[in-house]
Structures are given as C-alpha cells and as structure tokens.
Length: 107
Ligand SMILES: [Zn+2]
Image 1: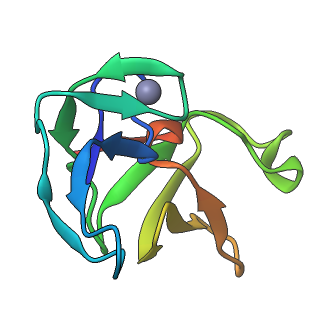
Image 2: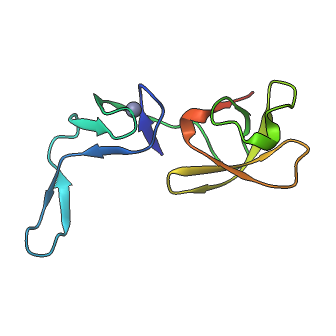
C-alpha cells in the first residue's frame, strides 16, 4: 500500500482523467501531484512496509485497554482492511484497527 511520506496516512489522492459520462477511471493525470487528506498537504507517497504477519509497535491512537500496559506495546498484524491495519496486541485476545502511521514495524 502507498502511504503519505509525511504522516504515513493512506488517504492519499492523485489527480486523474475520468470519463465524464461513465465516471470510469482512465489514468492518472499527474502522478507527481498527490494530496494527503490525513495531513492536508501536497505530498509524495512511499510504499508502506506493513504486511500481514508483521510484528509492530503500536505508537499512536493507543486503545484504552492498553493505556496502562508497559511500553513498548507490541502486536502482530492479522489483516489489512482498506485504510485500516488490524493488529492483535501481544497477550490480548482481541484485534484493534490502526492507521499505518500509528504503527512501527519491529524487526
Ligand atoms: Zn499525510
């Protein structure tokens, strides 16, 4: 997945040619002209390093169940659902949704 170079968000748009009658997407108009809805900046995208099975540290939007746990908060990616990355925190039975910029890959 491509994410914003500045904030890591995945809500990035590119200008495109669209058929005005069918709304069919034809092609990117200018691939270099990208806009991030998450940080409201013109940006460039980078390929997200996150994939299912990766071990990650939860660095942002920490769920209230984990607020009093010791740091770093580690988990494993169990799924990717559109903009969301599903992570099962270590020792927990549930999964939480995060944006890519709220996670850091751990080696
Ligand atoms: Zn951004």
